[in-house]
Image (cartoon, rainbow over all chains, first blue to last red; front, side):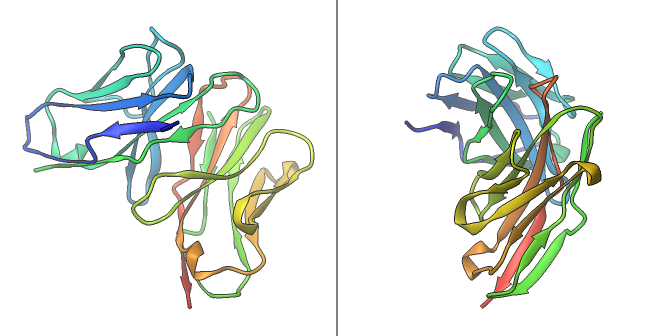
Length: 114
Length: 114
């Protein structure tokens, strides 16, 4: 099992450019998440998908869109990148059952917006 | 709304010193609690978790945490740290009712000096 994979690992964008961050998991998990990690602020939830076909906003959804393409894949799109979106982005997944559930994280995408 | 506080932002210890990192949460209902570790340049890995039962939880690499319900705390401890424990540590809380929501603390950077 590869677990949770993310592409790309690094990306540099200019203000106003768009891009999509890809995430895939091979653990047959129902729930998937996108977080951003900024110094001194921990991890903040951008969007999550409780199951295939559903998506919901987290704490900081503005400027982002998501697509749950199928059970395995959950992508994050920046339509018009801004310097404030410079961050490290982590995708996570978990089985989605109520009890005894743990999130597994991908390796992250380091995004710089100039 | 649930929240997590990690009061120590940066801790510096010498090898063999004992470690205790504070974590307090606020939530009125039943919670599940986690400690994650992030080594430099890597993604988050689960150290330990508490769902129910014995409030003293043992995790990997000699770490343990104690859930004290009356104090809303879940402090992380290790009797003797090693240089390889240098990392950032995140406490997280997941409420049992809305099981999708995981809230992370802002993290504690631990630096262990040889």
